[in-house]
Length: 220
Image (cartoon, rainbow, N blue to C red; front, side, top):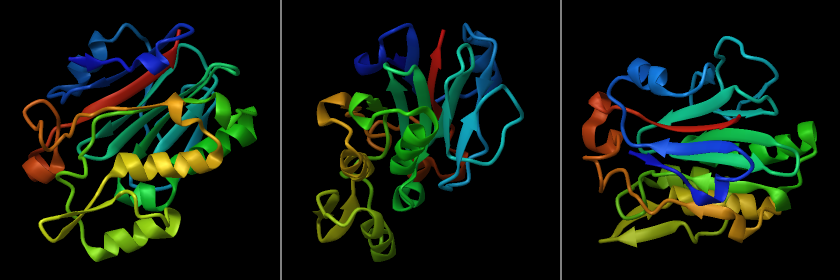
């Protein structure tokens, strides 16, 4: 099943989040596209400005103005984010786990879109896909302290049965609102990958045997 966020279904944009994929090559071959660029993800704050189709490089975010080159990221509990600027026809894909969130990867991507392409954050449409939610994402104090350095407010920090949980979607939303993105232009999936591990890949549930799901966006 594919999840198409309505906020991005405009101006001939193809954007969707998948459920878990067992065979990536088979999935890739089923797509109605010739080129799909996926970075080598390492929980960094590196951003690729994709000017032409090339070999994958280490990064956790991609932005491009190229048509007919789809970009995407893979996740298994981390937050997948897709971005579209309808004014300048710029797209982005971001992988934001807790490490990337602590480094401000999504906020830095929005800033980079402005620097490179002149994207006004007020015009951006952002879709945050399925990830592990605050209901299930228990973390230690070291994670909270790392997140606080980039997101001082504690609205994304929850207490469940005396334990600390964090909501990655909320933390990232708070970060992007600071850049000028409008709250009404942000779509957030309600699905928790841990709660719905039958449908989604969850590293917390399956460990190293977890499969992956994908967030993909492209301009036709």
